[in-house]
Length: 153
Figure 1 (tube, helix red, strand yellow):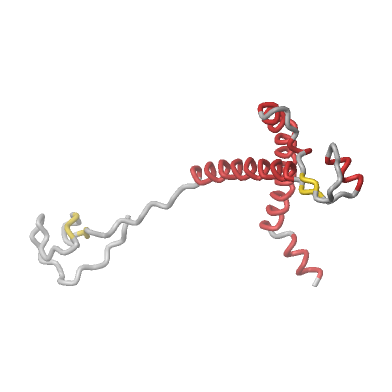
Figure 2 (tube, rainbow, N blue to C red):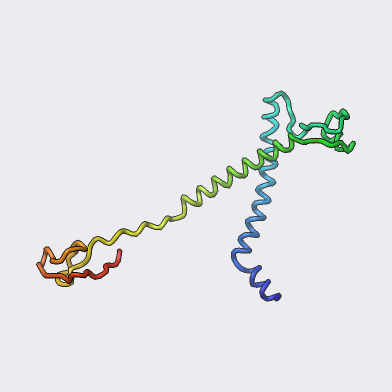
């Protein structure tokens, strides 16, 4: 059983997945910092000096001047400002992933569609003739009625 687990864990796809998760977690931290430290402060300034992370609705009936004060008192709150930050995080990550996938798709070669076989080679003079021809237009040789299957090039 240990050998099967080792073979599974050392398979290339599992290691690639682990690396992807680690890089994704680090990228998530960068995006969260970007949203909290760079994007929302100017946005809050434009909206009248609003700090999104401190926006909340108090459900307990008391009066609290900040989210930290409400949490310290154990009040029930709806933290919609933190939710707005999370939505911005998601949108930025989704857009970044979209850009990466778009570039990967652009770099990935698409297989060329196979062309339909419409010609064959005359077995007498080796010239190219239409697939349905019964006589070669070059050497006038009669061809068999069931043409051989030509291989697409």
